[in-house]
Length: 131
Image (tube, rainbow, N blue to C red):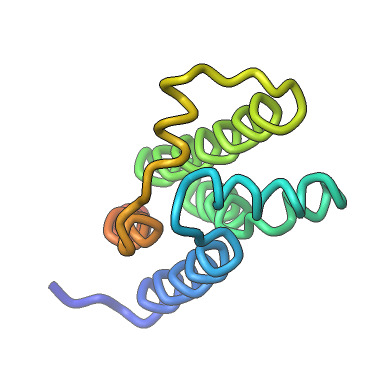
């Protein structure tokens, strides 16, 4: 399998953008991650959405590839990711409605490599989109 320079550049750009997202969201628990996100969200919601560059990358990639199925899968995953984050931020910090089970999940420690899981799937989707 030979990856041409264009595909490799897109994959590397995505990895850099994903690492940026992980760097500002990373914490020891999901609640810690939410707290970091809420800090940005409460300060400026537009800035919060701008700080999700992989979503915009995936939308651009979908348009560039004439809405290839793999690109659309990436867009759906990134859209669900942002929607889930916003929903949790609203539920935890604004409405303050949290079940006991959900609070236990949010306060449980997460593995050190968990924030980087996207780096295992997304490059393959980008490759299949452009190959």
